[in-house]
Length: 88
Image (cartoon, rainbow, N blue to C red; front, top):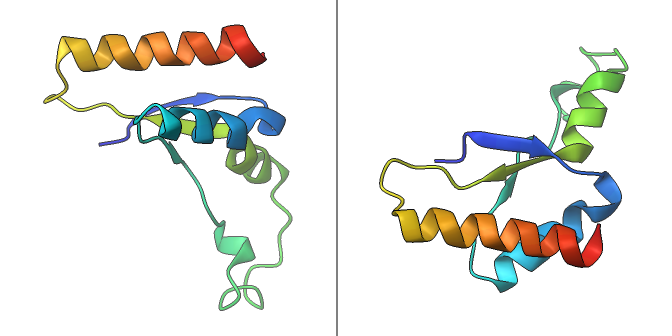
């Protein structure tokens, strides 16, 4: 499950995702494509959605599951802190 999400500056988003992947922690982006960007719906939805575009560019999801062990949670926390200490 990937319910826990947080905002990160979009200029660091890809670097963060790659850093976490390198450390064997799978993170995901919350929104990959908006409905207004879908080629099939583009003719129906003509709105510009600046808030949705902002969230798409800045939201990242961390692993969160009831089956995660405390050691897993500590590793995730330690790795996130390490990223911010190195790059932010």
